[in-house]
Length: 201
Image: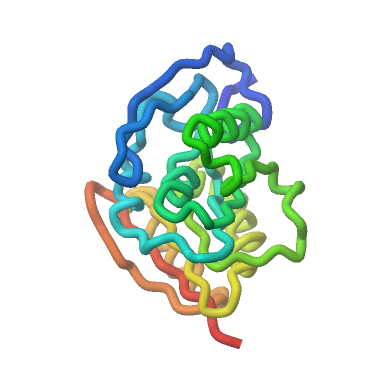
């Protein structure tokens, strides 16, 4: 079996270790393991995204493709009252995020869930995501089609995508869906940050 970070049950050994990362202006020790996205460090795309994000909303935030949790944890550290739904298909990643939330005293702010566990009627004030581009274009489009329309009116989604993996074409595709306005709000180190603002009702 090929071991991808977007596998539900990674085949690699579940050997946990701690890494030190900077989140929300703090140095924190967090748990990671093989078989999840970027297990050894805070990946470059997420670093770029974090530099271009607004403050978390005073409401519900979706971390789409949460991995071991840097986006969800940042939101909880910045605004302890936020309600973060952190979604991933990788069960090991979800367990790591839950454990990391406990390490930082953020379990009241974060729920780690598989996609099918999120109530269908739940809507979000904001979506933050470093989406799994390597799952392929049809699967990526299906993923975004499932979640971006769940933004509340005037809610904002921020996505980070590598330029050479199709950031501009993805921006064009999102624009064609009619979910709202899309703009590029940042660009650094080969990545673009895209903001989708949901249309008002």
